[in-house]
Length: 334
Image 1: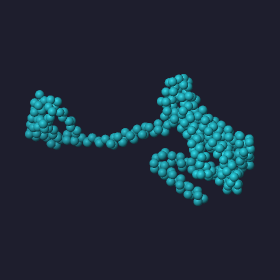
Image 2: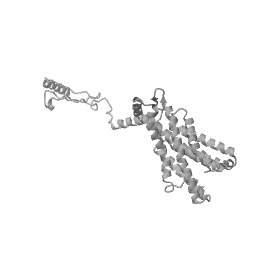
Image 3: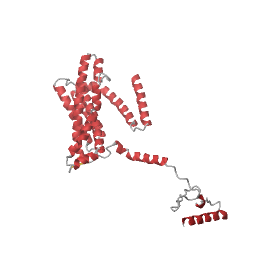
């Protein structure tokens, strides 16, 4: 219970930091934590029953696949039928690894082993689809000029999208690749630790963990490639055209707000004009042009300006001086 309280405090700190810097994920962090707690409590209550009934195990795997498709599909919202595409990619990736593992006897078909292994593989496929799909939409939006240039050269839409597809798939596999490279050096995976705590030998725990890690690599690669193949036709149109998804880029989402902030910053850097209070002293006076016929205009023939306000009328002496200055200026110009 102490660990839960400490982790709750750490979560509150993360939410506060996200809200302070306006990341826009503070609410999502809190919701994710609450959902995790509720879901783990429910699973803890029913897991014993699920492990005893094969039918309930199949239903549990179906719920896992549905939840993963909904989560990954939400990241692909701009695409039509995004949840169906995510479900197909996740199902293909998980099935491609789960069926051989069960058929060759790497894991038992008993619910006690089937449900955890299926959950691990489906979770890995979901993470790969979310990263790959999001990166693919951003790559298409950012690289549209290059894609249009390839289309202008006469290539097909799928060929024009190929660099963006490869880049998105490679980006989606980066977290798993880093984790697999550093397993045992930086992190101790949960399967390995759980088997050790359950009384298994270190060799057995390491073998099972290695099997799971390699299977996750295959699952994520297949799921990412499947999703990329399903997204490419959705972006193509008859006549070899590529259509941008609506709200596909985070930069495009925040572009109006960014432009508004830049305009506000420019307006703050520009000194405001002094308010007009009825006096010409505060008004900006036009600069008197230099006489083009003279190299230098002496101060004595420059026009004199005087301030006027409703409470003070100019004297006759100041009016005579201004008239004389204008006469001397006209004489110098002529």
